[in-house]
Image (tube, rainbow, N blue to C red):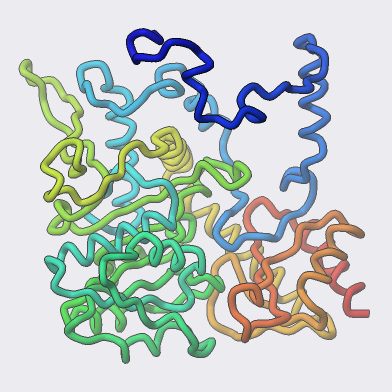
Length: 435
């Protein structure tokens, strides 16, 4: 090997590395047996505080939802667990069919016509939606209007993703707490798209039909960042005029996973399919007329000429998309609705109880889904530290981190995983904070 690369010795191969760092001596402990290694890892893992260790009311983009046992049972099958991108359809029919079913259910959930085979997470899916909108206008429109109530990290990723493209992103700096109504003043003939969240980052539900009409009136696309769990009871964005629906699908069977891997779903109208990033699995028939599945569209530079590629997206977490597919199939239409209703009613019960505590108050009366904002009598960090230290409760999200005007305001999340006893314990703990 050394001769093949023209090097005489190992020392010469590494001569560019400083001598003191070339062959560091590692002060490793003695080798452990398998049993001892397991004990050591379990001890280390025990130091973590997870949402399984106590009540959790933290959401803000990563949610604790129940995953039926069948999800993990399917994911751990060797055929799926070790599979890679299905380039060879003749040996990838299982993976291809699973992705096809995932796409079909995402379209049903969002009210759109086409879904791709997913992105890395909700933030990158949102950024890809921006690029799709710009490409749909043949790069002639470069103004992006985005609501301040789209997830702050999604907005940051969209800016990072599109830096160097000459885009102007407006609408999310400053403003008040009044929702998305004020965004229409930014719309003009240079606008490629308007981006809103549904429900928004504060959990509020708005009627977006007027925004869709006003966006389309100037030729702009409406991009909706949606919570797929909320779609169990809310009107799908496709029904009120959305052109692209993207978001985070982590809540559908994937778990929190300490922040990843997650699932960015992306659905759009058929006329934008060739401007969409990612890949699409389609259904066809083989030479003998049997049903089969193939990669119908994959507009990345590996498959087509670079200048015609819509993205350099390569591998995604196909296993997480499979989890979402199994989750949606297992719950079905009625199950998805039931989960959404549980989130809705439990969150509203929690809001009513907390609003009765002296010193705490509800910020506004806008309809909401599973997240809501409360104004606190003390800094949110202090309250969260008290909840965790004294009650073992993981509190809400400190909105002052991203919105200076929302100092001392907490975003609380309640899902189907929070029984009434946990909510009542939170109320009791907050009563102590206020006393």
